[in-house]
Image (cartoon, rainbow, N blue to C red):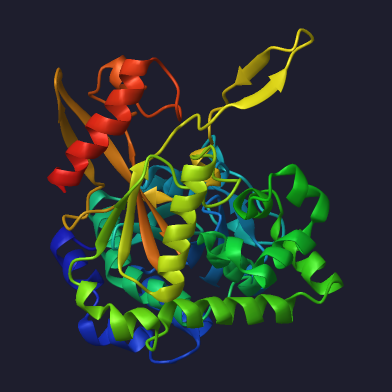
Length: 425
């Protein structure tokens, strides 16, 4: 580009009409994405423009649309976030500009993509409402050092088209639809009390299902896309996936429910249900026995009835211990660190768009806690976690173990913290 900064700004800004026209092919998200890359390539005068979308596991990018690379790479070119320059953009959520990509340590050549003839690389994240959707990349045949104004303008263009990209993904799960639907099912523990959904995950890989403590997120995380597609084809699972997914969506979006008819008055101010443990499923180790199972069943029943209820409890990073008897007959305990990425929860986001952190006053000062959110059918479960920066080491351990520690910690955790929350929310 040889334009001045001012003319570059004027020439590269997308108009409202252009953005509206991007999605004119209603119901055809693949065409929408091709409109996006074609417009960006033309506006920025580059030889290549490609859109890579983040897959449901949030660990891989897939090429969804391109102008310049080989068309047969669309849907086939996949890369982990730990590989390639596009992965670097997604990892750090920052632009990456390289005059000659082949000299960069993160450069990786993907066979049959046709990118070997292109040298320069400029990639920016596609972010909509604070959530990464993918990466937008432009490339040229000749080495080029992208100027700051050019980088800034591509960042601006990406921000303009990100909602269009997000909507295209919403309209149709056109990339690995079976995988998308399975992940949607896995992220809501509704599957745990629906026999059809449970059997669907089990049949994908019965041996791994047992080994992974019946955890669908762990199961899907360890299955490459081609294996999911192969197993689905072998067992004729596609119709079952579509059936269960449709039933889940009908369940979540139903209007004529018992709660809608008899408990609608609670919608503005839902019931807050406090418990030290919630037994949703064995793969979610934040309970030990009867109290947790009862609390878990209450929130599931509230979901089925569509009663406005919010569960409030604690997230135990090491959960409840595993136990065994040694040779002398004494019980031996083993605490395991829970892998949060394998659980169906995410940080609760406040009205300001930031993760929610609450402060709890105690006799000796205060404890801060971040809030995790779990969607349990139609209901929400909020879990407080004291393992946050700014807390004293002993306070960070307050919610580390269910029924762990001395009597003082157990009393403070169950009586003090939850009681303060009751009157502080």
